[in-house]
Length: 72
Length: 568
Image (cartoon, rainbow over all chains, first blue to last red; front, side, top):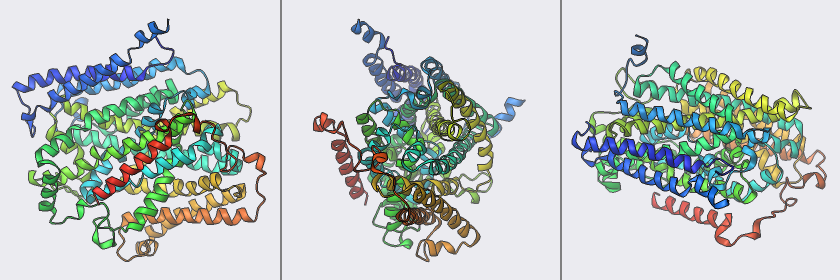
């Protein structure tokens, strides 16, 4: 692992976790829409997939252990 | 019973998924502090994050430290109340200052290797000026930190029905724990994390708001229909006279008071933000960081000003007409609630939790910024020079940790003090004008005028601060004095702050120049690395054009000008 803490990886993991939660909630809400304005736009689902995509991109791009292998 | 009392009245019930999202956030910020605690061995690690941050990390935290109560709640409220004019505080009130900081001022701060803004003043002007700046800054930061706490507790009370004491305790303890463990490194990296969460949680309102209103043109049409006036939709064209805009302000106040003195004062001399740049790993990163911040700053109105305008467009149709803090009757909502009301309107379970997390993240990043800056100034600029001249590095690290806790405790006290002010904005603007704008006069003369002397700087800063407090007190005692200060019978209270900043800065400048001309200047060898003309820029020519700060600063300036023209 790198000597210094990799904040971008940590952010990616956090966004991915939120992405999984919101995508799951969005899939449920697709069938059971919440009483919000524009619920038919399925904002929770789309926000979840966006967060998951961005989060995974950061996790892959800043994966700390892969860098450690490269150094050795 | 106790739990029921904590959640007595609220705008919306919280789904378990929202609670989970909020709990994950608290675990993540504390976890980050825990992971970073082992990397903090010296005072430089604690106060300057080891000077190893990249331009992106320093730039994002530079911006995020400012995204506290004002940014998210106050300016969304101001946009609802005043329209697009509120965007001036993001654009002309910040962007030129950030670019100027990156291009002109950063080399002096960075090359001098000072630990703080008061530390720079010590090198340039001597101990008395440093002491005056450090003591006033320490007082200001804990007062600002308190207002952040108060604002967050207020949101939690309004939206979730949380008891204010409970909110203040939980948020302040969390900040105290992660900053005490990891120092500035923990504060900065948490600010970067919080910056991402703020965007993730807040974007739902502008996106769904624009879909609901039919895009920008539909939004404008609804605002015109609701307000019967187009003055909410212009940046510049209504500023020709105090009477022709909703703020009661004139373009001279915006350009000179806000853009020149207020913006430059805050973004270039407030150690809360400058501390993030001093953590950069090299001079080029330190110069790029505020320029990166400027690019993001230009986009922040998307999640702050646009929601205020969306509120103006859609809330009246839903039977909600917001009023000022002092004018609200039971059951009526205030301007400050516009953002939470819109979150509830659009965000279903899960997304609402993320939106509330964004608000909490904003408040905590602002509070942590103030507390970490307070700790550095207290330790380096008050404790070491005034209490223990021969303090070891271990002493400084220990005092840094204790002063973080002290800063949080004093902030809790000031949060309760802030509750007695009728308007949060008045409180904050008054603090800035008392301390920050006169300081900008002292620092800019110190950097650009080699003839400025220590006695000149001290008395100039003292006179600037004194005149600002005196002008504020004058208007409090005699409200009609506002018309004298703003040079117009039609000026409104918002104009008072801007003109007070301008006059107090001028007082500082005039006194500094006057006293300097009658006192002996420092010899040239003492000014190396501190003043224009005696400071070499060693890294400027080593990079191709597209990697140079000046390239990105000019590009940002062009985009800034385009935005002014687009929304004129």
